[in-house]
Length: 263
Image 1 (cartoon, rainbow, N blue to C red):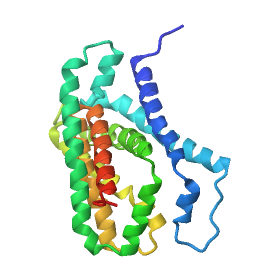
Image 2 (image 1 turned 90 degrees about the horizontal axis):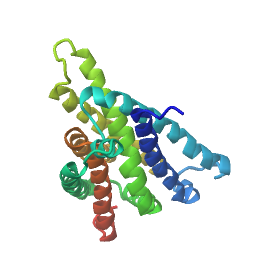
Image 3 (image 1 turned 90 degrees about the vertical axis):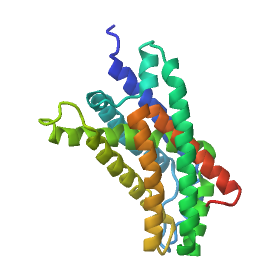
């Protein structure tokens, strides 16, 4: 039997980790979530088919993102450094401490930034919107926040999308730059961060009846701010640092919410 290539093993490992995050979303009470939707229309019942679709569809998107990262990340100097070293049976300890420190500090700073942005912008948001967002947040269990937010979203937005953007921008300027210059990374970090922020809007439009411009601005700015942190960490410290930072940010936000300082 022909052994699997390193790229295939990396794909299976990363996709499997991300899919665990997708599975964790089944911990959310979907019936209670639908009850938050402000509409008089008849909403679909939560059937086994609906639950299956909620797993299969994001699983496909995840596969595409992981495939893009596995294929393109080495070409532009991005990596999942710790995982790749472990798979190659190399030494991971020299890079472990810097990755942990960067991830924890980045997540702490990013989480605090989100809480501060929320504190500053809450007076400009409708009370109904704040209540709806808070109710939605309470429906998402802490393990789901860590696994889906921390792992799955980083695989989708950083490992997949940001890598693709860096590679695509570099292809445009490749004749002048044999290697991807820092400007490619800056542009890709910014673009993927904004897309990450905009990607949270569908949930807002789902659970909030009257969506205002300040609310839209808050959602995009708060999430994009963390996206910049995660993108930088992915570039400089590897995928694992971005994942750890995302998890740590959720710990900060969950703690702030428990203390009544966040939604």
